[in-house]
Length: 229
Length: 229
DNA sequence: TATAATCATATTGCCAGACAAAATTGGTAG
DNA sequence: CTACCAATTTTGTCTGGCAATATGATTATA
Image (cartoon, rainbow over all chains, first blue to last red; front, side, top):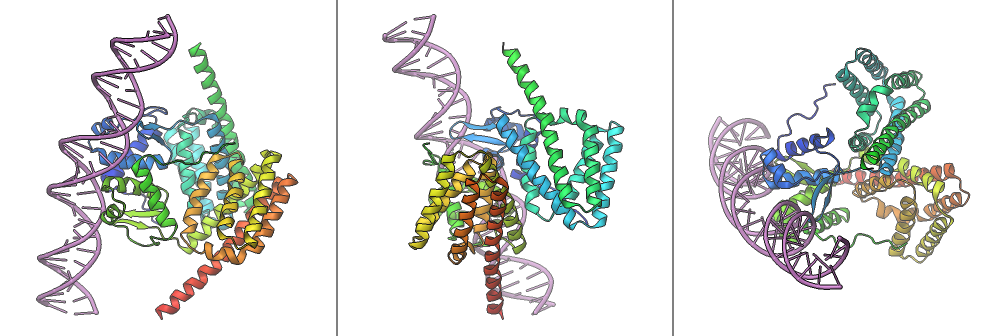
């Protein structure tokens, strides 16, 4: 099963799009920040046309808001938005897990188990990068075999928007032990071929993550409030 | 509750985007059809830049596929895609109905009831347009008050893609009686404040619609096969 | 002083035209 | 009928420009 991911985006606008998306999701451009077309052009060494086309894509993904005659701004996420996004994510990840259990091969489940093991190892070894990689592998395996391609794409969008909150990376570390336990029981439900349980655990997993995230967000806001006062 | 919908999209590209989206969803441009930039420019009387920006948006919505160096093509939907889209729609509409029951005011529920009554009246009077309008009102009321704005948007996208199948309009008429009954019981579940049941009915409703749609699609395909032979 | 009107500047929205690179088409030779 | 090649079409990208709008500063006014 050779999985050829996205190779070279061969058009310039695709690379621009990728560069901007990357800059936004990694926090180079911060939520609320204004993106001036000219500056982006210089920064990237491309024409306005290319930048503008790329921006339309990001607008559609809701990573940037474009107000007519005022230009693009990196999207901001309100607490209510965050709540809703996590809610949806929970629903869809549960759905995906359920679908996965219903049609995964034993090998695919073994794959998940291996990824989970890698994850634990990386976590114990403080290998931040390894953690991310293992997580991605697990995630890909589940979503790629849940029987519904479109869920994947929607979830990708949800993730990138949730990431705008920037509460997740900090969060991850603290939550890791609990997170690992949850993943173990998820894998167990896979092995038991218990779809309903897999769904439940997935949903719970997301909900727990969201709780921690909201904790950070609240703290963040309190801080901001204190700074102002 | 003044609901100011989208007024006049005040930028040209937004109007172009709307015009193209409209042309695609109403079947002026058919799935698989190639869209040549020049022709679109002439047709719409705008520059290539505007057309291209609009196309990026539609690409993101997956109403058109853009293959590098080959240009935009109206998206086609495979049977498998259709299955998955309906599956998702079922999940999300169920979720929305559940959310609605959980937080709707009595008035909003009464609104639904009124819309359903209008729907029945229009159906009995063969008022095709009235049917669509009442349906839209019902739909808007539920989704607009389900507690999750993002579901709305995702469903909008799913609908427009499913509409590419063009099996729905034909379908609607035949299925109307059954559909009406389903909607009645949905409303009843609202009045009973039975969220779980509302969710179930919604999901079932979509699943039933999908079955009929697939019937048409199969027939369509058989026809195409016969024509080829 | 606070507010309102006015003007200068920055930025977006949109266009025309141009050209290289890639794809499509049509024809020709094998 | 296939394979290759030339002619044409179409996309990808850039440059430069101009009008309309928003932003910010300045001045006038209450």
